[in-house]
Image (tube, rainbow, N blue to C red; front, side):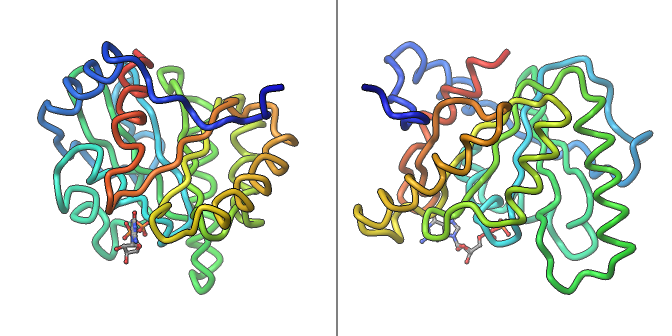
Length: 215
Ligand code: GDP
C-alpha cells in the first residue's frame, strides 16, 4: 500500500537535467510588491514559496538558485511584508512574506493578509505554492491557516520540509506522520512531500526538477 503523501521520488535524469538547466540561468530580483495593483503582468508561469518566519525560506531559495544572499537581500527590514518577485528564465519565483510574526502590529498583519488573499485568489499564472514546514516542528496552527487560505483560493500547494539535516531519521519519520495527518484535511494539498536541507543540498535537485516541470 502506498502511504498517503509519500516523499517525492528523485526524478529521472531528464527531469533532473531540466531542473539543473532552468536554475543554471540568472535569477534576478524584479520587484517587491506592497499592493495588488503593483503585481507584474501574469504573462508567464510562476510558483510561490510560503512559510513561517525563520522556517528557512530564504536559505532554500538561495540554495535553489545558487545565488547566496538573493532572497535575504530582498528580505531586509521593511521588505519583509512585500511579495518579492524573482525572474528565472521564462518564469517568476515568488517569495511570499513570512507569516507568524508574534509581535507584528495587527494593522500590519491585516494589511499583508489582505494582499496575500488578493494575490492567491487572482493569480491565474500561479502553478503551485510550496508551503515550507520545519522538519523539526511539523505543521503548526499558523501553517494550517495558510493551508486553509490556499484551499479556499483553489491553489494547489506542496509541502517542502526544511532543515532535514537537523533531525535524526526517527524524528523525521514522526514529523512526516504528523504532516501527512494534517494534510489529509486539505484537498488542495499536492500528494507528495519534498524533504530538503539547504545546508546539505538534500532534495534541491528534486525540487528544481518539480519546478521545471511546472511550465
Ligand atoms: P526565513 O526567515 O524563512 O527566510 O529563514 P532563513 O533562511 O533566514 O533561516 C533561518 C535560520 O535557519 C537561519 O539561522 C539559517 O541558517 C537556518 N537554516 C536555514 N536552512 C537550514 C538548513 O537546511 N539546515 C540548517 N541546519 N539550518 C538552516
